[in-house]
Amino acid sequence: MAGKIFIALDRLTLVLDKLSEKIDLWIPASLQTNNRELTGFVRRHAGMVAILDRQSTLPPKKILLPQVETLLRFEHRKDPQDPLKVSVSLDDKSEVRPALVFGAHPCDVRAFLTLDRVFTNGPYVDPYYLERRRNTLFATLVCLQEDAACFCSSVGSGPADTEGSDFRIIPVDGGYVVEALTQKAQSLLDSLGDAPTQHQEAQAMQVVEEVAKRRVGDLDLTGSAEAFRKRFEQNDYWQEMAAQCLSCGVCTHVCPTCYCFTITDEIENLRGERLRSWDSCMFYQYSLEASGHNPRPSKLNRYRNRVGHKFSYIPKKYDGLIGCSGCGRCIRSCPVSIDIRQIVGRLKENACESK
Image 1 (tube, rainbow, N blue to C red):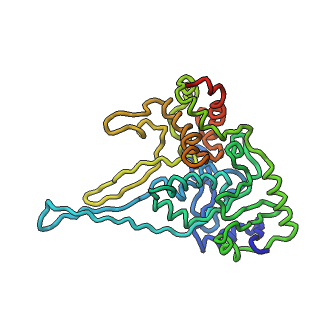
Image 2: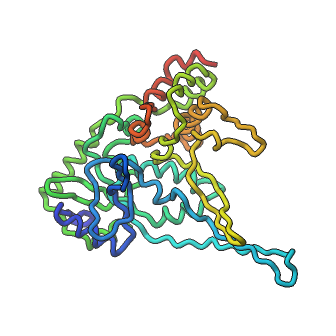
Image 3: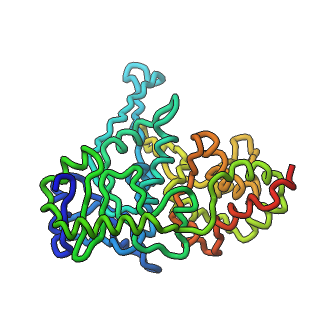
């Protein structure tokens, strides 16, 4: 059947090998670490096994927004006839290959809708992000089993959400039914496998219907912008919420929608690079100004800003879009078990008492 193929479990590695020959393929895989088992998205090489039975520890954000990237290279050149006269040559060329992210979850892909608004919407468009975005496809796995930290439905999404996806991967008996959702996806799908049988297709439809009915997360965290505004000056509330926070920044590191960055010039002799690197609004230095003034000097200020950014500032700026995809990674990774669901859920409680 046009637009769908079936990939048997024992053929998945062969299909991924075939895909890797055509396109840069990113899959969730095990990462080397001394202390704990981590999974994250890596560029696949032949024979590498994709981990599809659970959500990755780290999101695929770095594929479109690398943790460290070179924006441009520069070189100072002195005039041999006049050493005091110096010119600067710039090189901002970059090569972006077509890529496919295989095995992401709906919350992972939905997160890019936030990054899209920030980096491609408005008078200033980020050409580095935009070029990668245009050249990257997403094959999203229908999420069959959430854990206690997941809350995608609480932010207006769900485990069968396809918004932002090019493929939908549906687990069925013995393998996966893969459905093309966009024209770009269709052209890549045609040569990868055979059409599903009627039984496999019927089972896939049943899986999607059942998953779409599930609600993941008990709270409704939408429409919190006004409640946040009313709570903004309740310092006692924010002090209580931020009391446990260590300002370690791990929540922003694992978050698929956080995009704070810093830019530095790294220079050796007359040559150098301008680098963009991930940063965190939870760090004191992030908002520190050159004058020495810091508009967010305390942990309270910084944590309030993080919550407000996701659930008030972004929704107000981008027509209700919540800057959180409900993936739960910040909850799982927080060393002191801060739960952003409870903090945002409590915003509406007695909010009318604030100014």
